[in-house]
Length: 341
Image 1: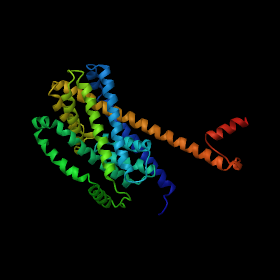
Image 2 (image 1 turned 135 degrees about the horizontal axis):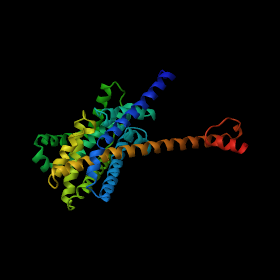
Image 3 (image 1 turned 90 degrees about the horizontal axis):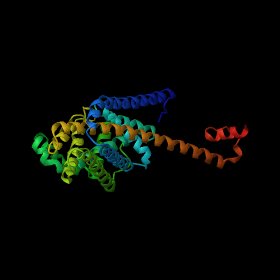
Image 4 (image 1 turned 90 degrees about the vertical axis):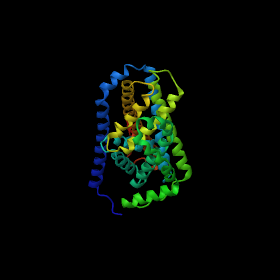
């Protein structure tokens, strides 16, 4: 293999940072653009309900991230949750760029920066999307009566469930992954995903969507009396909304598609204006949680990298105590300079 030239390596590094900054800029702009409407709607909901809704939403995002990391680790050597979360969450911000496919591009570039081949990251992301669709249709069955009443044109979605279940078989997933990698002229993966990995990822995704339903339930129940049936309905509706969002990939994060499902479901207990307001708040919360959690994951990964570098430096000095005349850098060098002073 021909080594990369320093100039090419620097250009790739600059391109990665430009892509990351651009994606974060899109997400921030998207949040700021709808803030005026969100601020008005927030005035009608108690702070406690908003805080509880935001908290369970972040827990749902964490469960979804664990599902993605589970699939990534099922395709190769183990990656830490912090590093996997950085790739998944920061890369996932690409969905706010029109086209949404930017999320896959950014995740592949972040994975490559950590020494993970692009093909493995791509397949993990595609597997995650497939598991997400099947999980959402599984829970979406809870909202089927509502969907049939207001969106009969979406009935065909449930035909994807048996197809999706078949595609979750490890042999079928491996065949699909090999086909996709061949199309992109990439070598096949060295690992075959196992049943255990698929089941764990599927269960984590169910937890993720269930927490998202609870997030919506907290907001709705700020306006009506709590009802367990409403929770079941909202969980199914928001799960279906994510599948619609994936299929409507031309739109930034499926904007508009998910809201249509949610407003229709909330129409059973709320007015259209109330449902629209809560839908807007929910969307803004998702953007805010994406930015907050992605930032936290990036900072955690950077801190872990710094700690590992410090540990390597300490180990080097411990193994070669007679080589203290060798120039060091970092905290140890600073401490030696202070002692000399």
